[in-house]
Structure formats: structure tokens, C-alpha cells
Length: 278
Image: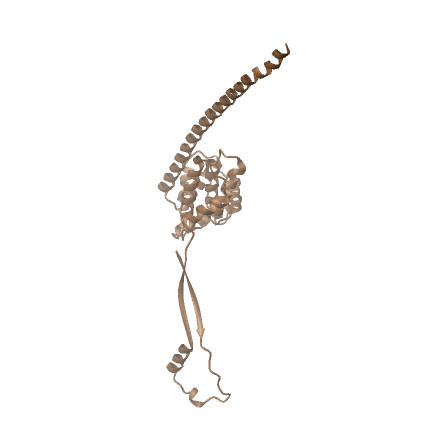
């Protein structure tokens, strides 16, 4: 909930006065003049409550933007991600960050890796649009982060450095002021940045987390959860892949059996004319 103060002023019209003012008008005391003024002009202040969209609103927007039903394997994960990011998105301390964009893009590309690229992009666009943000901005900032990180040996915040370093420095400043909303998607973005440098040393991520003033334990916990979800998803994909292979084999067998029966049925009909001719 956010409240906005709205001030309205209603001033009573002053009566027309003669061109020659009376002397007693200038001899009135200050309190009397203030009282008269307050009667003529009344000021009222009311608070308007601005309510953010609900989770149901976000889900409706997603379904409206992406009408095709997703396979159950993907639908469950996407809905969970949508709920989580919706709650982050409408938190009073929420601030968009290119690092978060990289984290969210990375998650989507891995989670929806089994879908055709065009369909995967449609899901992503519907997801970000449902959060009332710009999917093109997410893609652009994530790509810029990736390109920059690939040419770095270490990742450090620097207010006077590259645009990506400035973005990290902005986060560090917000953390120091207690105005930064940490999310698991931001943690994934940090992990991805370090991964893109090619560094295998855990201290690289630890140093970055420390430089930003974040909790190492919390970042580690979120990354473990993220990796666990991906692991389960990969297992589920393998199970689905095996299921689809079995279903395809059964379908081919049924079609072959159907074709054989049709051929057997057609054989006597073809033989009948030859016998009558003989």
C-alpha cells in the first residue's frame, strides 16, 4: 500500500467592494484578519491509497499475453517464479537492477531450455509484461552484463568504472543505506557474472558479495536452492523425454498394426476379380 497526499483548496468568492474602502477595514486586528481569511478559504487534505496489483492480476496478465497452455513441467515453475518476482516487484524498496535482469534471464533460459526458442521468448515476454516491466530492457541489460563479464578476470563495483561496475556500486551504496531489496534472482545474477569470467575459485564470488555488503550465508543458501531446482528440473526433463520416446514407439507400433490390418483386409478384395476372370 502506498499513500499519496492530495491537497484541495476551496476559496469563497469575496463580495464586491466599493472603490472607496471604509476606514474600519484597515483598523481590524491581525487575529481578526486571519480568522476572516480562514473562513473565506478552506484547505482540506485527504490521503489516497494506491494499491499495487495482486498476484491474481499478474497471473491474469500472463495468461492474457501467453494464451497457449504450457506443459505441466514448465507451468509449475513459471507460476512459482511469477509469484516470487511479483512480491519483490511491488515491494517499496524494489529497484530494478541489470544484475537482477541477468539472473532472471539466466533462470528462464535454463528452465525453459526444452522449449523452442521462439516459444521460450514469448513466455519470457509475457512474464515480464505481467510484472509491468519492459522485457526488451531485461534482455538488453542482461546481454550487456554478459558481454562485459566475459572480458573480466574479477568483478568489482566501481562508481567511476564501466556502466556494469557503476550498477554494482549503486547496489553497494543502497545496501549501505539499508535501501536495497535483496532477492534470489539478484544472487543468481551475481553467480552468473562470476561464472562468465571463467573463475572456478569460490573466493571470487565471496569477494564480490562482501564488496556489495550482502550476507554470504543468504547468497549461498539461495544459490543452493537454485541449483537444486535446476537439478530436479533436469531429472524431470529426462523422465519426460523417456516418456515421450515410449509414447512415440507405441504410436508407431499402433500405426504399423493398423496399416497391416488394412492391407490384410484389402488383399481378398484385390484377389476376387482375378478369380472371376479365370
